[in-house]
Length: 397
Figure 1: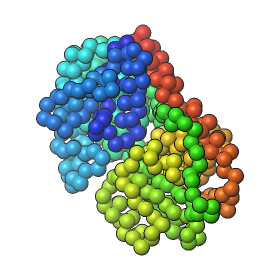
Figure 2: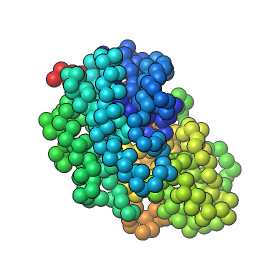
Figure 3: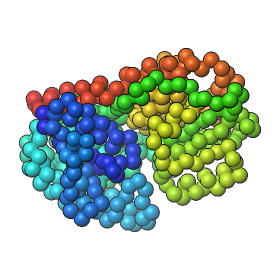
């Protein structure tokens, strides 16, 4: 099968889980004998193509006011103008349409659309190409993709979001098949009337675990508990709340390692609050496979409804139990006794769990084994099979 995958970002510009999913789908299906080409955004002034791990990648210039990934320092007026263009970017649709004429795929699979806009669905439909879309976030319902505002989750679309996303929702009728990376994110769109008549499926994000069974971190008996955070440093990820809880733990009982990048102002604020604490380390961008094996527990303190954070499966794959907020699709990832879920709006819940872990540090091997078992249900092969089944169904229509 010949497949065209469209993703806002791709290596070497990828910085989030959605881009890694698009890449793993492309490379896994290529390894199975399918021909996959990727269309993504690039920082150059013209379309540039390259071969990456057997996948042909086309980097398109962004026809908008500025490059926004991962976070832009642009002022409010410029951001509003950027999102207005991104509501229906005909210039990007023309670029993608030309590449689809060149690739001539059997099916088109779009992932994150920021920068391209849903106008590229029209380009695929005009060419009679079967179209599958993967829901990684709330982009079709919210200009900022999170449905999170002023420190709270949005129970419904506000008037501003309905107006800003109207062109995207109108284009949803062009989609033949829709994949939700979680049941949560799929149903959030279906109940709002999007993708009426399209075939639907839930295909959880996959991850390739380490070849060797993970071993427990080696350290002296009685050493501090190693707590980790790995993700974007933005307010809706809840890192500030984790830091508050950590500062309330008994002295020298634990250490907090923070990995990731994001909003510079938010990061600077948090670094200032923790400058005097030698038990809090800021590591910047790291490879998960280098960071996770050194942890005793990973905390995912998300405040907004994350569709399916890949970092949970990454931690499970390395035998690391996870303490996670009961938000979005996160509960769908837990299998057996592999961690703890808590309500982030209930004060003291996260603190109580971490205090419990400190008091019961021995005998965690069964939990590490349960984490590894949970990770096996999120394989690349299972993910690729789900995508291929949807591609074939869309093509058959």
